[in-house]
Length: 313
Length: 244
Image (cartoon, rainbow over all chains, first blue to last red):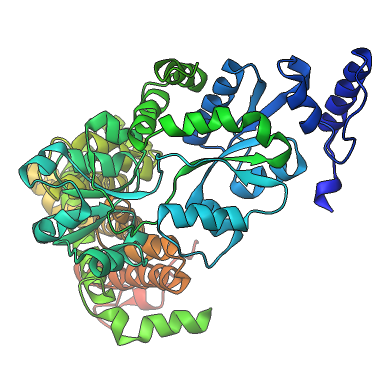
């Protein structure tokens, strides 16, 4: 049902593409349910043929990723535009399904959980493979990146150095003298305190329930707490030089950043976006989010700088 | 829903331990008393002074304007400012106490001031007339007469502080607010509703001693509860508000 609905934009673009095809004297090829994909990729650099819309959710990281994707596509001669801040996953996936957007930044574990409420896989590759099977017809994920936005335990640089901490396994020996600050639900949920104990044998001296954001970051920085539960790409990490302890046992699952695309544009965008994904890391994402969220720079400018530095722009 | 709240309130598991209702209740009472003592030490002498001298009335107005300050916003702001300055857990306690003291001061200050202000000038003059000093007038005449309003100011402050001390949980402290915030975060609505119920019950329970205090310390002549000293006195039968 939903795949047969074509919103106004697609119809108009399709009509335009057909008109141009007629004007160029090309005979219609394909002519199936995909008026755009087959003809556009064969026509190469023609601007009107490859009108790709990159959408995003309504949080800054997603918006930044959309600008990175769109920027890389433009650099490769694809006419890409952005439609950022669409809303929650429920809303933007509908937009993708209807075809009002063609590409979205997504997260492997989160997206898999959306399609399978019982999803419990934690290994990054297995999560990615399982996700590919879970996706509805008409959508695909391209190559995943190393960048992950997920729960993490962070400590200050001083703590990491003095207690020689790099992974969460290192934490089990010294957690008994540390206070953990985290949102209050972390205390009871299975990936929180109970999970830390079960997977790593980590038992903190005490638990301080704190709101995410400045309260948690400030308390960690100023020593009221010695470890904090912060998202792994949080700009506060780059801003304060916090150290993310590696989740070697994948307690927090896998949330690799991955482009989710409509099948009808896949061929056109895959090569470019796969290259972007090879360059993205959690650390780079955190650095960029520091610029957009703390220094209040425009996400499209930050994205352009990233692409230039990585030789993609 | 009501069943699960009753279950939560009556199960022994939810009462015991460092996160239990008993511990949280004691923390909540602790915050409330600490805040009230600080607020009273500031507001009562100030209110007496303003009422007695008639100077600095603007302070009462200014204090009342404080009521408009959003407690939660101020708490977040203060916490962020004080986090780098204060060591350890005081960084969470001090901002919470400050905002609650600011909340309690207006009620106590206005009550005290209004009580002294409302003293019949004739009583004051009479006191001076028999040779009382200013301090004696304040302590022996004005303060006793001001007591009913002063205590009602305290009672208003208690109610507000008990209800608002739940915000301390927002900055990582304990108290009954933990049940509200943690309950919402984990979608444990029985604990949220149960916590709210406990706050209301605690507010009423703490109000009772003040009502008793008022009965004990306020001169019977100032209350509506006047007992005739001698049964034969005519004031027993005289209609209290009767106009002739």
